[in-house]
Amino acid sequence: MCIRDRYMGYIKQQMEEAHQELIFGNFKQAIDGYTKLIDNVPDAYLYRAIAYIEATNYDLAIKDLEKCAQIDSNRFQVHFRWGIALFYKEQFAFALTAFKMAEPLAKEESEKAII
Image (tube, rainbow, N blue to C red; front, side, top):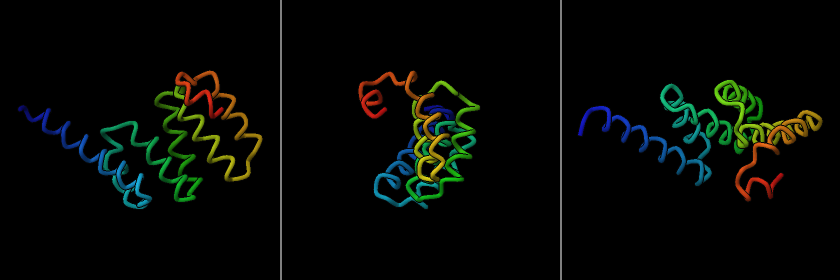
């Protein structure tokens, strides 16, 4: 196994550990785990934003979602989660705009069902 493969395995393992922390409600640990991965895994911004939302830190979630949109603005989850964060901040008009941006990006039936 080459060094690159080992490194990618390590990154995958770290991402999985951060996911587990998020699933079990250990939001600080999840945020810390995703933060360590930010430079190597662009999706870490999205997952960290989800953890921030769960931890009720909506401003930091929005900041990460803005970064996600800079990386790839054509992702349902980015706009949908942005709408959630804005909704919880009671910025309803902006939340509605984010949800409307998410709607045409929904590809999966499960995504279409929640919009």
